[in-house]
Amino acid sequence: MLHINVLYIYPKIIEINKEINLFRIIDNNIKETLVFYCKKGSNYKIMMMDTMSGENKEILGVSKIEEVGTFIKNIEESEGIIKSLNSLEDIKKYILNSKCK
Image 1 (cartoon, helix red, strand yellow):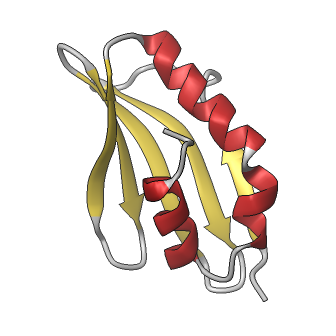
Image 2 (cartoon, rainbow, N blue to C red; image 1 turned 120 degrees about the vertical axis):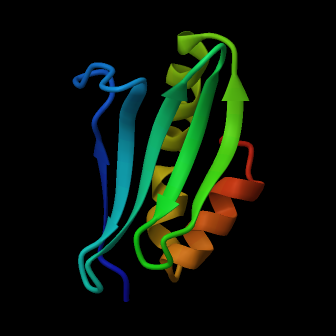
């Protein structure tokens, strides 16, 4: 059984090198994490990095920082579902395919 924690970082942390850490989904049993962060350019790209595979993927592009907050709110509202899934891979698929975006 997974022991999942969700650690919200944004808005406590400011932008560093045009990146903003948003939150992490941590499996304390296997010590692996899904890291969500935002790259700032002409728009904002919400990125997901899987520490187990090293995969780094853009999951959403938004034009305003307020939309990043909306994405995080949607994750917060889905936290119960996220914690009930069977693996980080299932969590990753859920977020990529869900209305969290």
